[in-house]
Amino acid sequence: MRKQVPLVCQHVENISRDAMADFQDVIRRYVRHRQGLYALHRKGKLYYVGLASDLYWRLKSHLKDRHGTSWDRFSLYLTIGDKHLKELESLILRITKPTGNKVKGKFAKSDNLKRRLTTDIKAIQRDQLNGIIGKIIITASTKSEPSDGKAPALHSYIHSWAN
Image (tube, rainbow, N blue to C red; front, side):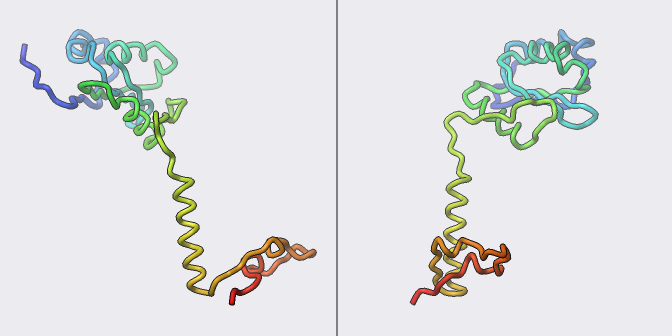
């Protein structure tokens, strides 16, 4: 047997599903008791992404579970350690959105920046608008529409000008 070189990641991609039956002893030698990510493919497209602490047994279970007949090829990504494996899986799920995965993946201890980004963009847009047409004071009466319901396009934005 050849000596394994310690790498951060080893991989094998686009292997036929039939190899699990025809060459299971060989595959077992490479991936048994190894953790990492795996991908199931159907007709050349990504179908499912998952993580496992034992890739061989996890892949073998997918031959008989609800995904059993839904994939025809697989890829394996073996890692050393599993410190960030869940976050990596979640990232891949969110980017690729495979049809076989029911969940999109969650990030532990993650901060969604969308609300802060929205607030910052609105502040910049407000400053830009003030620079273009002058400072605007918006009051509660500005937000109400006339009784006919047909307010001029800028009516709700421009009420009075600051001195």
